[in-house]
Length: 202
Ligand SMILES: Nc1nc2c(c(=O)[nH]1)N[C@H]1C(S)=C(S)[C@@H](COP(=O)(O)O)O[C@H]1N2
Ligand SMILES: [Mo]
Image (cartoon, rainbow, N blue to C red):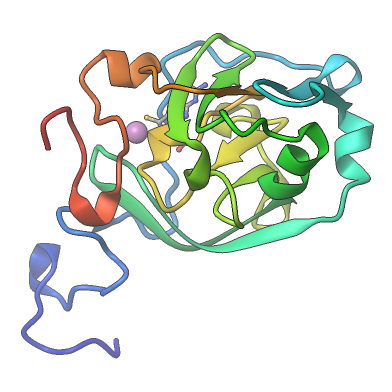
């Protein structure tokens, strides 16, 4: 390991500088955290939409999504329950061209991400724009499994992973912030892992 001695992680080993405070590295594992029963979403009827405060609400089918220019994320993910997965890879599309297709109105400043199951999570629009988020359907070259949100999930890796809604259905643009599922249940509105924004009041 190439990390500085004396900067200790869990177990006394060198602490990887990619780990935000209070996080540990799960290594090759990828824990599953779902509040819902894993849904079965056939590709033939799957859709993804951008709507709310936009010039034109747009809905994409699975085939239409696949035809968009691909985009990948190679990096880390951080769950509020304190595990992080380092150096992992996702592919799908950037959210930017999806937002551009719908045309956010000037008043649009927040997003509610909705899952096909009804799960929701809120984000400032700027946290899903400018290359910071993806609709992802592959993990390390394999189709995203249903347990991990397949056919496709939102991926917002710079925030705690509860913001990355599995089974993503819809991004609803809004002119105000509203708490989503976990945010109504005490999780932080924003969820920056480097600032340890885990719970309301952090
Ligand atoms: N629809 C939905 N999305 C979700 C969740 C969920 O329960 N339902 N859990 C969130 C939480 S708390 C985490 S840590 C990650 C877990 O994703 P994983 O199970 O693929 O690791 O998904 C997030 N997205
Ligand atoms: Mo989580």
